[in-house]
Length: 188
Ligand code: IMP
Ligand code: MG
Image (cartoon, rainbow, N blue to C red; front, side, top):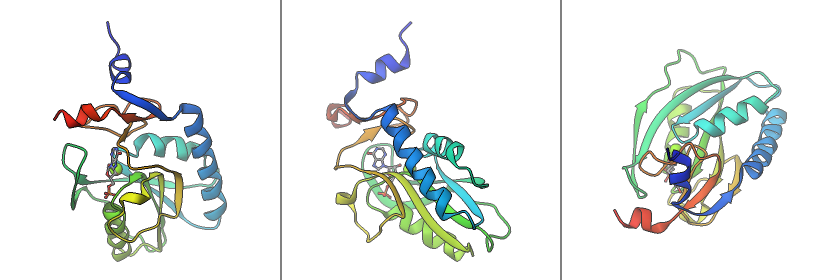
């Protein structure tokens, strides 16, 4: 029987970040966060579903205590183009955020709309501090003025999948980040 991996691998034009490179990036980011949040009350906030794999790997590498939580938001339809509007699909149900230092864990920043919206939303919710760590950043795509606090790797304007990132809910389980062949989404 064909494994999903074998089928999906064929839709990848180029591996952008191998498992080894991802491990190095996540290790470096965890060390920075460890140092910066030593005297804080860290709440890691995973933005579902794209950040699931990154969050899992990152939190295992932290040595400081932290709590975790999840939110689900959507800015994309089903395809590769952002709709520009943010919907909260799963909210953070916490009584008191006033002693929490929230670090949003994001898979990738494109227009910047999701993160700038989320940051003001959580600040209004009373968090003591709100910052963001993203595995990938496409700075050339920015539509709002936003600079993340921690960036794993800045990448050019290409559509990537794997390591949690999807196209139409596929490819999330690939262990690397790869550039999707344009014919896959142009055919739609
Ligand atoms: P933004 O609000 O435009 O910054 O959108 C960020 C969100 O768009 C990410 O959390 C992803 O879910 C999605 N996204 C942006 N670029 C890509 C990509 O290359 N591959 C997969 N998802 C992407
Ligand atoms: Mg996302």
